[in-house]
Amino acid sequence: MNAVQSMNPLVQARDVHKSFDELEVLKGIDLDIMPGEVVVILGPSGSGKSTLLRCINHLEAINKGFIAVDGQQIGYRLRNGQLEKLSANGIARQRRNIGMVFQQFNLYPHMTVLQNIIEAPVGIHGESRQEATQNALKLLERVGLSEKAASYPRQLSGGQQQRVAIARALAIKPKLMLFDEPTSALDPELVGEVLATMRDLAKQGLTMIVVTHEIGFAREAADRVVFMDGGKIVEMGAPEDVIGNPQHPRTKAFLSRFL
Amino acid sequence: MSGLHLTSASPAGDAPFRDVATAHAPFRLGRLILWVAIVLVAVDFAWIVAHNENFGWPVVAAYFFNPTVISGLYVSLGLTVVAMALGTVLGLGLAIARMSKDRLATSFAALFIWFFRGTPLLVQLIFWYNLSTLFPQLSIAIPFGPTLASWDTNSVITPMTAAIVGLALNEAAYMAEIIRGGLLSVDRGQTETAEAFGMTRARALWRIIIPQAMRSIVPPTGNQLISMIKATSLVSVIAMADLLYSVQSIYNRTFEIIPMLLVAVIWYLLITSILNVGQSYIEAYYGRSDRRTGTAEKPVLAGAAVQEASH
Image 1: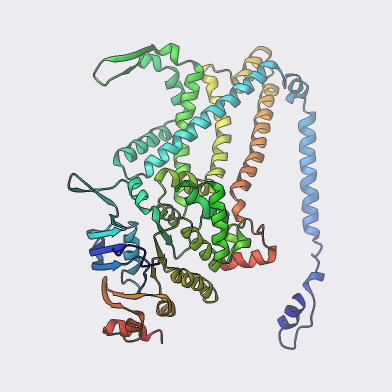
Image 2: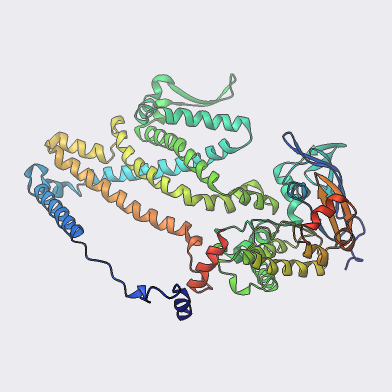
């Protein structure tokens, strides 16, 4: 499947800087992600990994540098050779092929599971309700929650909610999926079901960027592991290298806590 | 399942097993005496009211469906509905303007709310009614430029339009704050999710934020609606024939002041009672996602799931 797609990077980040007031959270990130690649970003809290993820779909605007997804510079457009900030609705259009899964699930609590999933396909991508519903039921089957279509989010466990959130993100047929600590808000016994679903997606060639603390998932599912610390990428490479044989002292110190 | 729990739940070897299912509430004499005393006082009060001739109950009955009273009632209800609808729509616009990042919009909304909340409604109504003394002509014109259209103020501002404009603008100021409070009560993550999925601002507001905000908007709006029904009685000062004005016009003739006011009071109470019932239905509708029993699950399982999901 990878061979069919273009060999241009799907995500390009160059010298990305991001500050919140005085605090510089990202201090020059360079990262290319190829189509079909599964990249897991590891790092201690406050290392800037979630911020980087949120910059990729412009939930946070970067202060310096360049981020492009699928050849489009996110949040900006070129007009008469000048870079111009896009309007909110212009940015919304650019985000339509990027799926996102949040730490707190963020399902729409006033909608049933099925309504949650078809909201974007019907409302934004112009699919017919029937087509979207059929697709949604297939996705629910894939995440193992077929019988929950008519339930409200509050009636589901955390793990079930997160699987619905994954189905919802898949329903827009994304080119890129962003996972922002998808298992951090879950009880330990519910983490497994969500990771299993994500492992499944990784095998099917979806381009995924996953911010997580699950070292096991990184080892098994990632094509590449990125280790961040203090707003910089400290180490990057195949999981067996970065996790199995870390070079940088910060990576070693971080990973030693999980052994 | 329960048998298993019962045996294992008993602490080691002391208290004998007594199932709480067999427990009963103790009889409380004090409560009974209190009940009897309060019922007695209430019945006595009702008897006094019913037998006091000054209340003029036969007069109340005779005028209750009087055509003048009924047409006044229609005016009050019509004013309430129109002013409330306009006020809510305008209030929504003001709330969104006030929450926007645009300085012009925020300042305008803040100024509007400051003015209309800061002056008495009665004064505002009289002002609108007497607008012609301030501006004899109303015109649509380019600022400092030519006039495009012009009307005589007295022909535009009738008691009816003065009442609608006065009530609606005042209501808009209050509704703006209620709606803003509701919008603020929705989790930030919801806006963010809608954004991440590429929804436009308007769509996110309409599909995601407002339906969730309704839960905290409805109760104070119910309050406002009830206040509004009563506030319509203020328009009697600008010669608008609402419910209060109608009963006044009758007792000015018959001098049956108390009975006629009772007619109005009972009508106001009836309307507000109906509104209360309506409000509880609306609240149930917007709270439907909160019900614990799932459509596809047994109640016990759903209850457990809710607990899990809530931390």
